[in-house]
Structure formats: structure tokens, C-alpha cells
Image (cartoon, rainbow, N blue to C red; front, side, top):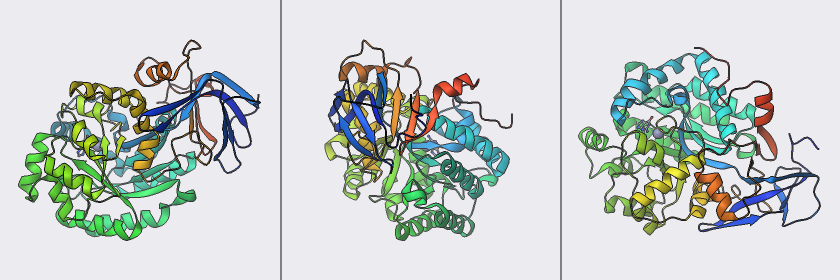
Length: 431
Ligand code: GUN
Ligand code: ZN
């Protein structure tokens, strides 16, 4: 059996499953995928000769996680919600520890291992407020061959003093991170401007972030209308016609902006959001765990607003994007909205990647990047429907066997287990 550390030049047989459009998936039970030397897919056949046979395992595109927090890796499961209590009791104290580069390095390692082990091949990652911790994260992502859009969060009010960085320090630090990392390795890494949310940023900081991002083409991201107390406090602090209006007035709402949660929005806000071309990061597991409410699907679907799924680690409880698709399904049914499983696969892969400006990710088709995940799949599963049921909704399905980015392996589950690794939380680090 050839070494699968690099798939370049190999024809790999497996069962293949991927999204063809928002409502459909392709299923090739005897498929063969061929990867070129540049890490892109050069051919996909429904059968034929192969250099390695992995069936009955199934290959899918890698998953896209549109929203998660690296400095919250250690607090997954902290049940201190709702949102504002959870931030105060669990989140801010842990994020303050990222002033220590040693802690940041250890957690960056565990975080990146968890991403790869979850089969995530594109992630939009929030850091802590500390520029050095963000630099450590970007270096770790670079070293491990992962693909991400990442940056420090910007905060200059509404939290413990240790988490403030005023605009005259935060913005130059963000600029130098962008100088160092934006577009690194042919676009594998990008840097984002991330004012945390209206409760922890002055208008000056948010405006400065938007002004820094625009000429550099950086993505912007923040939280929006997650919790009713948050919506009320945002209005008390910043005024404005509504919550979205606060961000609009500061130049943050446009087609390179990603808004997490978007639960308590008026129709008028949704109209403006859609007109701006902004993207929703839908985080249904987090919304459940913090009791935030359900992101309403009808206004989003009626307006064709792009959606990417977000684990929202650590308010969300799993790094595995398929678990989030499962929560998204539950959220839809609670609202009486029927969304086919194919559509959740779309948002979790190709649609999510497209929403984040990466149209050559998320499909098993020639020209696409060979960002792949190998899953165990029982031999009796013999249709796209059953494969989707297993991969998206079967919570006891084992974690991915392997993950590749540009045809290069970034996760090998069985080698990890053979070496005594505990999935995936065995990165060395402080207690
Ligand atoms: N709003 C502001 N910060 C956060 C965060 O870290 N997580 C979530 N879920 N919401 C936020
Ligand atoms: Zn978040």
C-alpha cells in the first residue's frame, strides 16, 4: 500500500460523496479520485484502476467551520450560560491566560490537532485579544498545513482590564499580523479583523478595524444578535436604529463580513444584511447550549443569504462540523422548516467554502483542491441517503480516519491511536 502522507500522483479508490449543488449530492460507490502534483484533483471516475483501494470507507470533501474560538479550547462544556454570564464566568478568565505565550502555544497545538482530527479543512478562527497569541496560532496553522482565516479579537471595553487593547495598540498589531500572514502559502492562511462584538468595542475600535481591513481585502467578523440581553445592552451603549445598524454605521457590513448567530433580527435588518452581501455563521449547537434561541431559517433562505456552519467552540460542544449540521437540522424542524440533508452537507462543505470566498474548495471535482476526509462507513450503507444519515446524524459514528489538505495528510487517526494518543486532547501543555 502506498504511503498516504501525500496523495499527489495517486489514484485512490473509495466510495465518494460530495455536494453538487445546494440540494443535491453525488455518490460514487466505486469511485476513483486522482490527485495532481499541485494538490488539486485532476480526475474523478466512477470506477477503474487505482493505486490504493480504501473502500468501503468513504471520502468526502473537508469540512468548513465558519466560526470558532481558539482560546476557548479548554472550556468546552462550561455550563455557565446564558451568554453574558458564560463570558464573565468561564470565557474571559480563560482568555486572559493567553497573555502567556507558553499557554498560547500549548493550546494552539491542541486546537490545531482537534481541527484536523475533526476533518475541518477551512476554519474561521477567533483568537484572544493578544497579538502574540494570534501569531502563535497562525504559525501553528502554517506548520501543520492547515487552512484558516484567523485573527485576534479586538476588545477595548466591557471586560476585565487584562483583556483590553486600545485602538492605538490593537490596530497596528493587527496590521503587522496581516503583513506577516495574509495570503501565506498561496492563500492557505488569511488574517481577519475581528471586533469581538458591540459590547466589548468602542466605535473608534470598530471603525478602525473596518478601515484597516478594507484596503487589504481582509475578512471581517463579529457576533450579532445572539442573546436578547446582549441586544439591549448594545443599544444602550451605541444607540443606532438596531443592532445591525451599529455595525453598518462603522463600515463593517459588506460582502467580506461574517456574522455569528443572527438570532434576534427584524425583517428590516435581514433585508439590509442581504443587500450588503454579508454571510451568516450559523451556530446551532452553541445557540442551544447557551439558550440563545434559534437562528430563523425562513428569512435567510428567502433572501438567499450565504450560510456557513460554525461549531462556535466553546459555546458549541464539538469540533465536528457534522455534529453542527445535526443541530442545524433540529433547529430547522423546530421552526417547521424542512431542509434536506444534502443542503446541510452543502453548507458544511462547498456552500460554506463559497460563502467564505473559496469556490475551489468543498467538492470532489477536477480543479478543486484535494481537501479530503476519509470516514469509516459500514459496508451495508449503499446509498447517498444512508451515507448522509451516517455521516451527519449518527452521533456515534467514529471520528474521521484521515484528513488531507491539498493532498497532504494532516491527520491519521489510527497512527495517533497506535501511538497511545487520546483523541485529540493529548497535546502537551500546562495543567
Ligand atoms: N459574543 C461575544 N463573545 C462571544 C464568544 O466568545 N462566544 C459567543 N458564543 N458569543 C460571544
Ligand atoms: Zn463566537
